[in-house]
View (cartoon, rainbow, N blue to C red):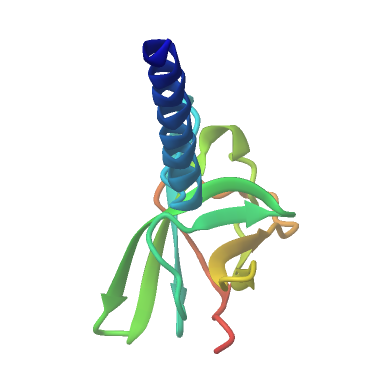
Length: 136
């Protein structure tokens, strides 16, 4: 009698811990990009605010990639942000604008891309020239 109750409680607690782990993984944005691979683009900002590695890169509210690396250029005094964009979203014009936005109750920051109208497209290792820094 007691063994079946203890087993049921154990299974319930195990399922709860698994659900908490999945929630933590989603909240920390550790989910990887699709298995199709990615290409890397970069952008320079005067101020990135609280942007972090693994922050989302979105277009029209759709996540298309994530921030992979943030560095500081000592010659131009700008932050250099490298982004991994999923290969299925490889049609961004060269005059795309990258802006840093804030969303959510916790003030999570992400990069929003706004495609331009140029016929030439961004490819691997391209740099976005038009940027808008974070509002502080």
